Length: 285
Image 1 (cartoon, rainbow, N blue to C red):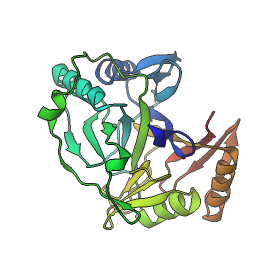
Image 2 (cartoon, helix red, strand yellow; image 1 turned 135 degrees about the vertical axis):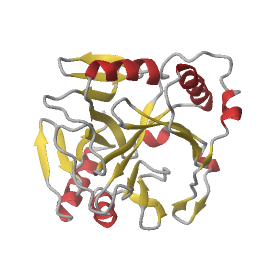
Image 3 (spheres, helix red, strand yellow; image 1 turned 180 degrees about the vertical axis):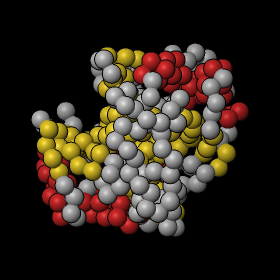
């Protein structure tokens, strides 16, 4: 989990809009394994370690269903500490009968895919040791091969699933964008991320510090995919966590240099990418 802490810039707390808060709470507790950190009238902060909010679910007034072919969330990705943790999660998911959308071996990681009751995409994954990742220059080798589920299921180490382990973090976020080049300018030239994998004119994977990706960007919902309506299901905002005040200051200057706008609320700096996805820029504590 070394890529989700300083000296890297990484994805933190992610805030989702849902249509039915109680339905989502049952799903995120019973199927995914979060526990409640803080409960308010229309939103609930969820945690893996009992101290840090990783995910907030909110049912806003006038919420509408997830809109098709929009920019915004493709999936958020929950990173588990070990392969045994992923094995236990897979056993639990299979026992639960909840529909899975796929399971892949990406060389750098092993991943399970599903969606919450509103259609918000979720990846649950574990990283292979980064010493085993293959690099061609500054590009990391990734693929989408079938997951060896049978092999994985033998790795539970005899322990039962008991919710998300304490070391769970938000590993990355993958976004639909309207224009890949504009997104690259914003995230790389502006925020300081580096491209580590490219899939033609379809998708980019970007990171800091040599991770396989902190952010995925794709145009699979169509070039020019519109921004979702304000109260529709999807991501309301996600956090980018900077290692130091200096790193954030550099990013703030970078955002302005590429024509982005930053507003301030308390000690949080807020910006939006060119596709309208809101980002909270915070400093690691």
